[in-house]
Length: 353
Image: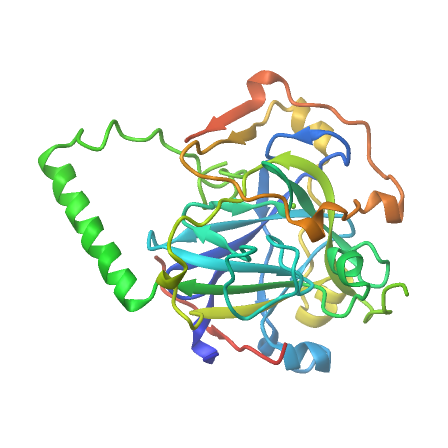
């Protein structure tokens, strides 16, 4: 993969073809019940590994990519935005696919589907664990057995998050662009030909607010200290959409891939010299303040079946104990229904993973 394929723009990762990924801080859900989409509480800061050659561990430098700081049991979601051109994005958690539960592969597969389809999938809050639901991404140290990686593979070797994007093939992209031009011409001539305009979506504060996406988760091998991976927390209502495009439409080579290292706040400070952002506000305070939660539904899209290897993944509380404060559910009026590019920065160097 060329070093220029992935770039940082602020705290966004640009993976080519207009694919933009941001990591959004959020409230951690209770591990029982099914909940609405939690709000976004700002972006995780992202830094290039290669900018800190004297302080990053050798193994991190060999993998390349970027790093970001997470607190123990901090929850996050991934916001997808950028070009309107179709793209397929693979998301790995410790090199276990968050969509299929299968081992990480460098190619797209349809059976089972091992990627999300952009721009239809505006965000991903967790692993594909149930029909119409996901289980929230929650940060835990490697070596505890609580990560998705540890529970699915029996080892905790990789940690972090892996991303790889594919655009359309040249022929499919040309056909898509012609179709879009024709649609734009029809809309200009007959503004209501395609039906009334869609309701606006919110951007930034939560799962459609998740950032800039539509405004709205033999015992394990001992791991490197300060390395973090993703386990799971509570369940929320969120579809992982089935790809309705012919598999041959996708390019055979990715437009960009990147390894995202998750590190503890003390390790972040040691490596970068920066303080990590403070831990997010607690859930009860957020709810008492009357701030919004979100509910998103796209009736025109088909949800993937639950991923078999992921259905048995247990929440981090089963491994580390329950540390939740009492749950305060949002009032009905706090649940917001969500309806049916900057100049690139420095390139991120890919490594061996």
